Image (cartoon, rainbow, N blue to C red; front, side, top):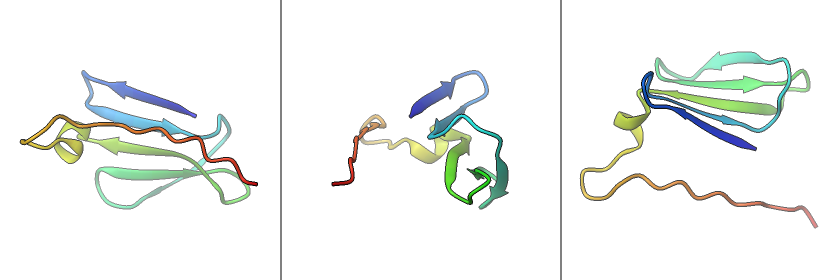
Length: 69
C-alpha cells in the first residue's frame, strides 16, 4: 500500500494495488479506483486538507496491516 500526498494540488491518493483501474466518483472530491475483479485498487481525495483536517488538532494517518488468518 502507498499513501501519496501532493501538497501543491492538495490531493491524497491511497494505492492498494498498482494495476489498470476503472474509476467511480462518489462525489466531486472522492473517487474510488477498482481493478478488473471489482476490488478497490485506490482512493483519491481532492481538496484533502479541507476534508481531512480539524481546527482542533492536525490530521493523523494510521496505517494498519491486517493479515487474514
